[in-house]
Amino acid sequence: MEPHELPARAEEVLEVVEAIPAGRVLTYGDVGELVGDRGPRFVGNVLRRFGSHVPWWRVLRADGSAAPPLAARAVGRWRAEGVPLRRDDADPVLVRVDLAAARWDAAGLEVPAGLPGGAR
Image (cartoon, rainbow, N blue to C red):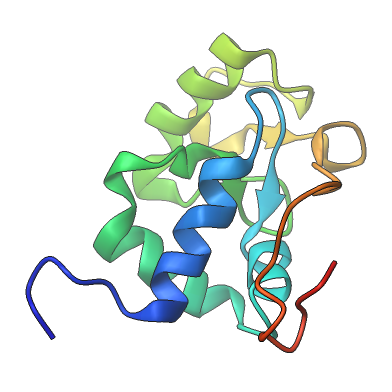
């Protein structure tokens, strides 16, 4: 594999993350399901390795929080985009997104039909 080439599954993760609209979010697990039964850790690893050019702050943990090393930057982006919060705090690690209000339904997202979760 050339250094600039992404593994196919990584590219699919990045495409889903790129599609999340401003002000909306998905969990790592949501993204994993959309790309065909991949776990949250897989999604996190893809974003850590290849995700600097996509809106990574729109993907968060199942409890509505950002990973602690990214929390300050993510919370700043959430506030700028108007993401609904269920807990706001001066400490970014304690901030929680209101998933019921902010979770994107992925309507109209084209998932490759060859994937187990495809043809949505």
